[in-house]
Structures are given as C-alpha cells and as structure tokens.
Length: 464
Image (cartoon, rainbow, N blue to C red):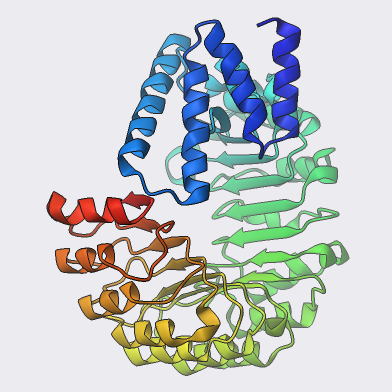
C-alpha cells in the first residue's frame, strides 16, 4: 500500500468514526500485503456488529475474541510495545502507560487514538509533549500516587523544575476537551500555568480526584463538566469553587466524597447554575433534611442525571423517596445507600415516574419487594441499563426479574450479588428479557456448564 493511499484511508477512517466501511477497505489493503492486522480489523468490526444487532452466538464471539487476542499479542511483541491500549474495531482508542513508553507509540494502529492515561512524572510528560500523537488527543488523564511517591518526586528541586517544564510544554501543544488529575500533588504555580496555557480554550471537562486541592482555584472560561471528587471540600470550599461567572456554562457537576453537608448543598442551589443537568453528590454528608431541601428545589426538577447516597445511615429512605419522586425528568439515576431497608428500596422504586434509561440502585437487602415494584412500574419499561451489582439479591428477586417486561433493556449488571446456580439458571430460562442483553455476572456462583451454557445460548454477551 502506497504511503499516500494509506494516509488517505486513515483520514477517511478518522472522518467517519462510526462507519465500518473505511476500516474494512483498509483491512483489505493490509491483508493484500500479508499484514495479519487486517484480519484483526475485520474480526473487530464483526464483533461490533454482533453487539449492535444483539446476535446470540457465543461460540463465534469466543472465536473472534481469541483471534484478536493472538494477533494483538504478536504485534505488541514484534514492536516491543510496553504500554497498554484499548482497541475498537482494530484501532487503538486509548493508551495507558506509567513511564515514557509513549515514545514507542507510532503506527497506523494508533491513527484514531483519542485518549492517553499517563503517570505524571517529568519523563512521561515530556515524552507525550514531544509525541506527534498529542495533536489528536481529546482526553488526557494524569495520575500519580501521592502516598507512595510524593516525597521522592519532590525531594530534588531539579525534578520539580523538570516536571513543571514538561507540563508547560504539554499544555502548549495539547488541545484535549477533557483533562483529569488523579491523586497527584501539583504545586499551585504549576496549576496556574496549566490554566493560563492555550489549553484553556479547548477544555470542556475538568476532573480532579483526591489531589490537588488547589485545583478548586483554577478559572476555566467555558467548562461544561466539573468534577471535584474527594478533594476535602466543605461548604466554604464549594462557595469558592462555584462563584466564578464562567461556570454558568456547566452542564455537569460531580462533588462526590466531600464533606459538603447542608451548607454545601445550599451553595449549589443558591448558585443557580442555569445549564446544569447532571449532578453527582454521593457520600457528600447530606442529611435527611438536606435531601428534603434538594427534593423541594427547582434544580432537581430539571436534572437529567442524578447520583446520590451515603455510606452513613442518613439520609433516611423517606428523604430519598422525596427526591426520586420530585426528579421527574431524569434519564439516569444512581442511588447507593447501603443502609436502606428492603421496604425503603421498594418505595423509592414505586415512586419513580421519570423516563429513566439507566438505573443503578444498591441497598435494600434481598430485594424481592424492590424487584416486584421495579417490574410492575410502567414508567421503567424504557430502561436500557439496569445495575443492581454489589448487593445480595435473593432467588425470588431474580425469578421476578427474569419474568420482567423490559423490552428496551440492553445491559444488566448483577455482579457480586451472591447469586446461586438456581438463580443463574432462572435467568437463562427467562421468557421475556431481550436476547440482546449484555449480562454481567462476575463474582457469583458460576456453576457447571449445564448452567452457564444456557446463559451463553440465551444472551448475546455474557461475562461471568
């Protein structure tokens, strides 16, 4: 394949990311010159088609997945690539590395790369800043481990300067729409340099987890999503973080795992962000009174996505019921409240009237009462994703679910639900669940092949 012809095909693949056609043309060209990666692209496209159409053919899926794995492992060995990557229909979309291994990353396999996850030391940052791949990134995740490496990273002033210089060079070149900082202690001057770079013009999502706390002081002119998770925020910190007028553009806000309390919630409600449609406040120390205040607010009635719940006993089930009933425009709801009784969980589900497409609910013990309300609530007929993972669900609840009329369901997660073999078999014998459902059952009793094989024959994608 001539270089100009290859470049033209790759340009077309990038221009039509959802279309398999250009990828298959490129695969044919690779196969004609004896490159096995062409076979991997074809297999990847077929796997994607089977998923889109909900085709139940477990043997064919295993065959395609194994062939993709073999070709990929051989290619990584041939290129001596040490980084990890996620593939979509034959092309790497995400790359992850803990060092400067990104210097190795080149080739048509990376033509549609959009995401890099990188350890934030000077060598790795500098390698990415010098890489031609930096120009095509849409998402950049910088991570560290403050507990293990903080003192070593900041021990020598020369190391500090090297990292600051590498970060500055990266910020000058990269134009991602999303930047995430996870558990890494940048100095405040490094953060301010980041916020003053040309990056500020492209950034639409800024996410911080655990560190750095100083990130709440940064000013981004056109953010659509702001996530400040577990950064030791209190009500006063929220006031400082949200007072900037530029944040009027926010459509999504995640302040989970902070000690917000009633004061922090009041700041959010008083700020009256006009475009906010997604709010995540899990483990934010919200009492029953604070939840009731949220339920009475104008904000909750215009949200499209909400995530709430506490590790503590508050808020009570009654307060969560008020929120679930008031939020009548939601398409996505997550409630993770492990202290809920089975009756509380059932009442929450009974009160739901929103046009939900995604429901994640954890709490309520064995869950038969909750499941009964779920399958009988006509407002939930449009569910596409149902996640009941990481909680004990009794056999009777699984039997009720297996008989549910959920015609739009595409994903069902029952991982770590302590399901026994009889419950798994009940799912395999479901007369109503769609065959296209992607079923997740990891962490449960798999049972003999006589139990698992019917699952593979019943649903198009099963992960045990």
